[in-house]
Amino acid sequence: MINESALCLNGIRAKRSLNHQGFEVLNGLSFIASDKSVHEVLDKTTVAETKALQIALGKIRKQLGDYKSRIYILDPHSIVTHSRCITPKKMISKESKPKKVLETYFCLEAETGQPVGFIISSSGRTVSNATEELLDILLEINPEGGLLIADAEHSTARIMERIRRENNLECLVPASRTIKVASYYEKIDYVESKGMWTGYSIGSIPYRLGDMKEEISLVVQKIQSSAESYSYKPFYSTEITSAEEFKKLVTETFRKRWTIEEFYNFESALGWNRASTMNLNIRYGKLTMGLIAQAAIYRLRQKMPKPYRQWTAGHLAEEIFLSTDGNIRVKGDTIIVTFYNFPKELDLEKYYNNLPEKLESEGIDPKIPWLFNYKLDFRFK
Image 1 (tube, rainbow, N blue to C red):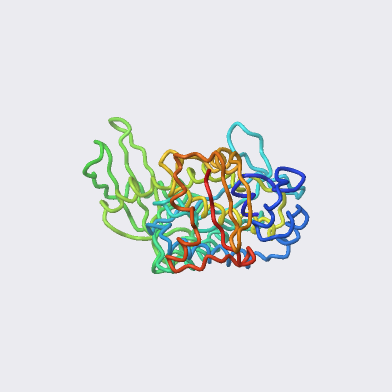
Image 2 (cartoon, rainbow, N blue to C red):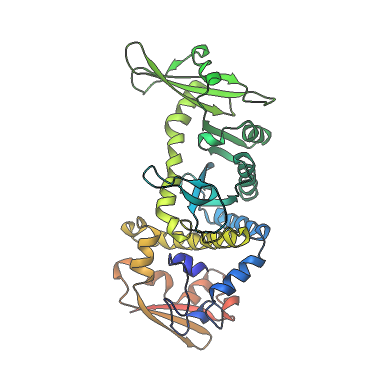
């Protein structure tokens, strides 16, 4: 399942793309799994189990340094589904017709653009409920918390209340442009910010959202459109601080929200652009396998020359993973994978040649339990 995700394919099956003897052994099996057997395994794996796997993976990635900041992006992602279930339809773009979607919510670290975790939201769940579940996953992986950046749909009283309760969480989200919010524009003392263009100023005022017990900050950018007219961009923040600090948050930090759009564009082919069923056990299982594949590919990208690091997951799969000839053989206690006509400019030999010896030098047991305790080595010719 991880391999088919990395190859950006719907399935790796004996009657489709792979008939090579040895592939199944390399995956720790005596057979190539069928669609039916994969679905049965995933159906028996509960949502709680796959969420625990997400958290375990996130903790490993944190230790490896894949999360370099404490700024996190929350964002919904609609996955087109071909399920026969009756579900709400959504327009993915202005040009497309409404389609059935599986609504997911992702959390990414903003500096590296790496996923922390995700949750799936059914049609009966609210944004607030789904976001709170995602925050639970984030805090399990990183108890230190950090700053959350999100879209306007996350600006609900329940979410703000939850973030205020957590001493280690802050947030910055666009405010809904309601009549109530607009009524505060003229009450704010705006400060012209240094380093910005003429006619730009920013200010904040305590604000009570909905039925919240405590106040948050309503932060507003005031931009002069003409000699007598102004435009306003409001934000909610759970931290009351200086105008200059707000300027930095709004003009610099909030821009990092687009990192998650780059993530969807680069990595969606790993299995986050399609959903054949609405069975949550199966969907959580497949999407979590995609997280593992993405983590492995990210580590591989760091070893590649710069141009290859900019390739999308689909491009990488097509040009590298699927276009390379090779074979598999066993020598003693080691499975040797040989690649032929591999791009020399990748220079991966220094990382993967004599892999067992390299692992032992780092104090890591090179025997792989799911490969029947064989070692794994690579050759490039």
